[in-house]
Length: 487
Image (cartoon, rainbow, N blue to C red):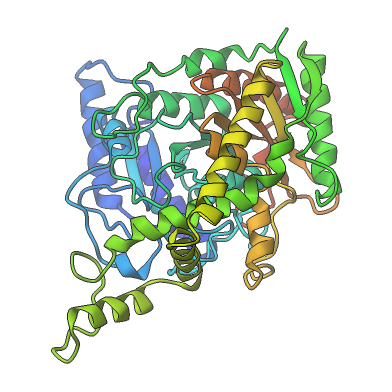
C-alpha cells in the first residue's frame, strides 16, 4: 500500500470513531496527505528512505508543530499557532513520518485521566465510560482505537506509562535528556520527557530511534548516543538478565487482578531464563509527596509566562483594566481548576519562609530515591513493578478527589525523580473487570535498550499464549473486528 492510502485509511478511521473517543484536538488531514504523497514520490524515485517513512503518527498537543494549533489542553493557549517545530517534531518530519494531528491531554499535562482537558475528556476504547489515563490519554487512546499506528507522548510523572497501561499499549519514558524538550510546553522542566507510544515493542523502538539523541537546542539534552533500542527489540533475549521486583510497589491498595497479571508476567520472564530477585527501595514510599511539591513548584515558575500579554488568550483588555488586572482576568478565565491548584501549591512551597521546609526537603527526598535506584541497579539489571495500582476507573469517579487521582502515579513517579529509563508493556486483562494491565520496567540511565529486551520477550511469550495481540481482545464497540487482519 502507498503512504497516501495508509494515511487516508487512518483519517477515515478517525472520522468514524472520534465522536466517541475524542483522542484528537486537531486533525491535520490536508498536510498529512501532502506529506504522504511526498514520501510516495520519493520511494517511486528510488530514494533511500528510513524504516518509518510514510507511517502516520499522532503528536501530543504539548509539542509544537509549525502551522498547527498547540493548546496544551488549555483555554489560555486557545488559537495559538507556533511558528516553529519542536525538535521531536522536526526529527519525525525529517524521517518521513506523517503527522496526522494533535492529541488530547490534561491541561498542561497536569492529570492522570485526561479529564482536566479544557476541551473535554478522552474516552478509553476498551470502555467508553472509563478514562484512558493521563496526561497523555489522547495519544494512548488513538493507538488503542486504531486511529494511528504510532504516537508521541510526554512523561512528567507517568503520563506515557500510565495511559499505556490502562489502554493495553506500549509506552516508553526515555532516560531524562535522551529526547529533546525543545518545543515542549514545559510543565516541570526537571521531570518532563517526550517518548514513543505504539502498539508493539518494535514499533516503539523504531520511533525512539528517530526522536532520540543529543540536541544542542536543549541545555538538558544528554550528549550521548541513543542506545541500540531497535536491536534490543528484535532480540528480546532475557537469558541471564537479573530482574528485581520492587517490594514497595505492591501489596495494600493494589487491585488484585493487577497483582495477579504482574506476578504471572514475572513468572513468564523467569521461564525465559531471567533471574528474579526481590529488591527493596524504601524511599520510594516518599516519592509521591516529594513529587507533588517539586512539580507544582516548577509549574508555578514555568506557567508564569501565560499572562495574557505575549500570546494566547487575553481577557478584560477593553480599556477599563490595567495590565495587572488583565493578567488576573486572563488567568482566571484561561486556567482550569487543577492548574490553579498546582500553581497555588507551588507558589506557596517556593515562598519565603517555606522554601526550605517544603521544596528543599522534597529535593532531599529526590536524592534518596535516586540512591535507592543506584543501590538496586548495583544488584540487578532492571526493576519491575505494576505500571499502575489499578485498571482504568470510570470517568468522573475521582475528579473531585485530587489525592485519590494523584495515587494513580504511585508506581511511575520514582523514575521521573531519578531520571532513569522506564516503560509500560501490556501483560493481560484483570479478571475482575476485563481491562488492560501493564507491567513497568525500569532501567539505569542510558540503558534504555534493556527496556526493549524485556518488553519484546514478554510480548512474544504472551501473544503466543493469547493467540495474538492483547488489543485483538478489545470490545467491538470502538475497535470492531476487521476481516482479513487489516485492523
